[in-house]
Length: 334
Ligand SMILES: Cc1ncc(C[n+]2csc(CCOP(=O)(O)OP(=O)(O)O)c2C)c(N)n1
Image 1 (spheres, rainbow, N blue to C red):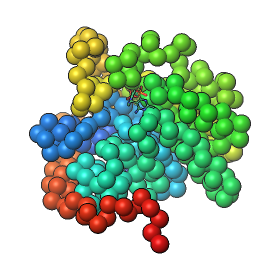
Image 2 (image 1 turned 180 degrees about the vertical axis):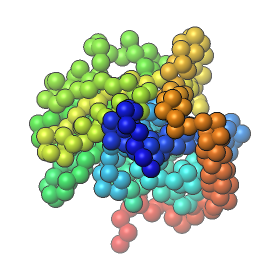
Image 3 (image 1 turned 60 degrees about the vertical axis):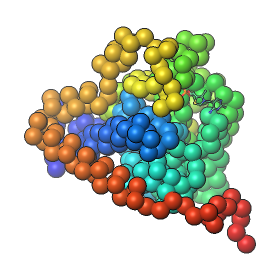
């Protein structure tokens, strides 16, 4: 497929096909996320913690990496990231329904703790920010083995106040490790608004203290996110070390399916966030670039719905883990 000259994606070296693929992943992430809420509300799965509003930041970032080569240590909202890196809708549902074939944990681990051996996706723990030292450790290990890989990790802005974040960034900065730390700022840490979380303006401002570039990017703009991550990836591969990237996002849902945001979040503010919805703005871009029209959009929506319907029905019919497998991956098998 051609590359549209004069278009923003063309200027970034993205073909029309690749641009549409970006949108496909954003749409898949959103529709999958919506389906997880329906399943949770109907009592079929226990818990959802959404990527809604952060698809641009996640898909843009993951598109800058090399699938199956680079490593990702995601956080619970990173559905878009793990889909781009190779996880399938079937695997997402195996995880959600806690079925035996779940690549994240064989149906044992808490929801949204994404992991996939084949695609170098490493599970985080429930305490927030613990994934950041893990990512830095993986980067150090790769350096010692002489492998030229990049490690991407992500967290929310609230989690960037944890000690783990600061220790990890310091170590990565001192040793110039090939890590990209992506703070997906969605302006809330559960019910705590941004103004009560930070004494500085941007999380990215902290990068200077660790001797690395700190970049602020509009997370709702998938192309701009792709551009800054591509630069950070190139920098890491050249051996120039880590980058801290803060994407500014919107959170379009409550913190999780256990939270009621009506108690702390004004509805007008949510309406304003919806006007910045990255899915809507990217769709608009595709219409203006002549890559999407109503017929093509319907085709894409139908394809995504079919994929999700098929994957959900298939995964639900899979077996639960057996009792005998309870201690697998807990103790070393002799
Ligand atoms: C160490 C630790 N403290 C508290 C929690 C409970 N907790 C889970 S998510 C969360 C909010 C995190 O907010 P943020 O980092 O901004 O990410 P977001 O969920 O908004 O994307 C908290 C406090 C936890 N999991 N771990």
